[in-house]
Image (cartoon, rainbow, N blue to C red; front, side):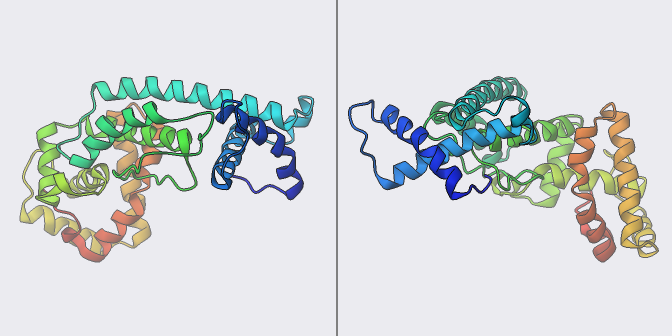
Length: 280
């Protein structure tokens, strides 16, 4: 959340006081210091939601200069609507969700997400994410909290499911098992592992279901030894672009998301050659 001046923070105190009364049911306005801090964070979270919706702070003046309390209330309504939207998105995503046997992937989606929607408190604690989100996505949740973190997380999971779901599930699981026989109990990103294998297979000129031969590996070794890291990245990016165009109707969001793996894979191929990935 954006840093506030002391004067700006003072302007929020009446809102926090009103929220304290709501929290205590009006019977007692006395709350612990820690709870008061949490409620201040709740107010700031909602105001940030409002400001992000406006895109630029200078737009506020053009709209008549809303006061802090109105900004908070409108931000709170934005949070409520986002939660409703994310619950519907999750329900749709979960219908065809496949964990490929990975325990923590299954747990975060089948157990964790319902728990988030059950426990999330948009009024008194919108800044709390509640979940640990143990399954890591390719895009980190840096700086995000509450329903904002859940929104990005589910968006990432949706893109990963779209990508993995375009391939035969048995083949996908074979790739995971070749990478780590105990992958079902591990805490790494599955999509990145499979993407590395797919791009590597295309570099070797090997169809996905076919077995990797020594000739395939030698071809990759020879090619990578003659290329710079930048050229390997360029080749991988072109391959990924073509793959997304052919299999996913040129989905730009998917391309950008998966592109985050290119520099790491290029480095692995350059340094380790065919040993970089467990090709199957």
